[in-house]
Image (tube, rainbow, N blue to C red; front, top):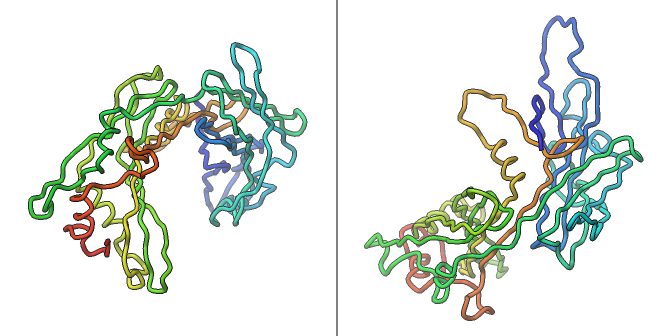
Length: 352
């Protein structure tokens, strides 16, 4: 791992500040070097792992005009693999394949972008180390990086049991009594996990005038926490106040562009999520978070040898089923559903 300075990574772009002057006596652009840029976060909870590999670029004039040109950001001759290393021995090797995936049009891509991937249908070994090796132009550049995985972890039983009879976000007559109870989303940290982000996903359906029914959801970000270390076993929690759910729903549906076409909305279910980031990914996120400091230039973090970017791990923990009846989705209790339909924040949003 190392700290490098004087560059800014934006997916695959090395941007330069362009100075305009009526007179110049020097060459602004430095000698060009196509530096590999790698982004990946292995996740043992998924059956496919993705790795993004691009290169920096440099041109004359407005550099943003080069961003959507594949020759500017992609290596034409590249092979890559991820080795699984356990007790010092390579126990598995995954050759990366490539494919084009759809993305929204923007500065860097117009409709599609190339990604590299390898299937992991039987999962990854949480006790192993994983090493990425990228070979560019048959050895002209060799890029490497290593990471350990974030292992499995769990919500605490005290929190899970609250889902048996439906989660309580509002007491009876909550709008009148202002009775919105607090509760804590609780979990125990994972081995290998450093940073944790908790959220609630709210699922619902919109029934339209043309009789179409559209399934939708919102994500309510509950906050982040950082573990004392990556040894796992630390108790962690985020406190939630019930009225926050209704305020979130109201804010998400404010100024809905097709509100006149919505006949009614139907609540479906909720699920709680905690995403855990490995140590390297946690550091990368922290370094690149917005800063209130007056110092505008900050060092950027990378753990890529002979390149830039991050190769780390993550794990997504999801609680979505009733603990007593695993075939039943998590829901709200009676008073919380009534508040959704008729309460002060969401009573006008056509929930039935």
